Length: 251
Length: 199
Image 1 (cartoon, rainbow over the protein chains, first blue to last red):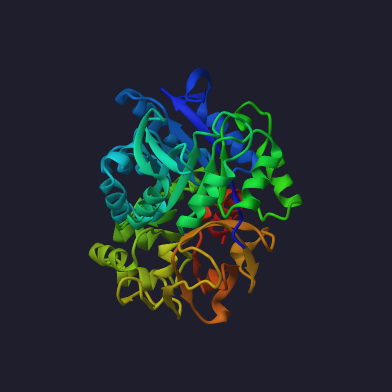
Image 2 (image 1 turned 90 degrees about the horizontal axis):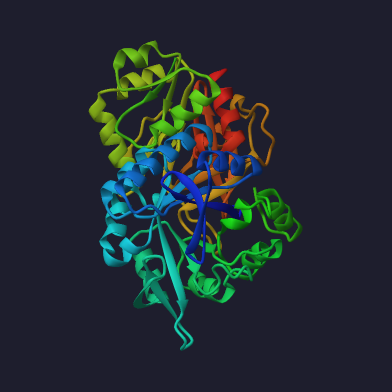
């Protein structure tokens, strides 16, 4: 039986690990390769690097991090942040990433999803989404780290993502992100009901129970967290043990 | 020396990284002399079957691969494993290397399961294989695929369960094939590559 995945995310700026709280107030912490190795040791099913650098120089440093990690960590690596072209996909995959995650640029240029899927295969195209309640009972999609409202309905967007050949969706609820009150079950359930590709839950994890809640109450394939793991409040092993106790199949 | 056959497919470096990490010498090559002098061969692969066979054809290595694969340990990974079979029905009908009897078809899992199968699934042992040495039944490995091989049970070392039995690990003589990615399957995958390198 296919296991549910527990995924740690590392925010990286200029080749160093950082963690933003609600996208602001970032503080510098350390070497991403070291963190990746530690997460691998704890049993991470996949490791996500999220590059928050805007410069070309930072991008180069990110690729160095991926290259080094790929030499020491043998689980799937996903890289996101600032991916805007087929060439970005190619460079990132060549550095050793198995998947590339695209967010804002997929909204401004949806063809990027279809082209990348055609050239590199759906399995390596992940579309990240930042979404929020619109106040009228629906959800709307944002870009640029949640700064720009695309006035686009979430359900419509996820269907388009699937039709264009993306292999996976990483759904970050802006309503839940940073609250540590749990994943956004409602929003997750909504998206899982719309598409047939795997959905990764992101944003809101604050304690052990939140992981199994999302995996039991929705059809999501994976759960992602950054700071909880990063600040060693929980280990991936603890999350997996708790999942097993709740009858969830994990590696 | 382990030769990783280069025919323009992606993901070659992941395999080499894993072999480097384990301390085995390897080289990515499409050179005939390398293939002949290698003591082991690995055929990696991601992408579509027909396209990959075309690319392999262009290297002019197909006949050589067929003759060398039965002389020394040969491992096909993911699409490289599917290419070991006689035929594939991915986007048409294509001939494979025919090293193991069987055909590659689109998976039709029962229940509410999505295609591709993407993620960690556990191996269910079927027949003894040298590649499974020191690996427990039920060990998790990483899969990414939409098509799967249908082949006689005698060649299947392990299945995975994904809405039905999925051929995961195959073996016929010196020829081995893994539908999953050992180079991305953590400690289990590394052990399997080690087993292959020590054959």
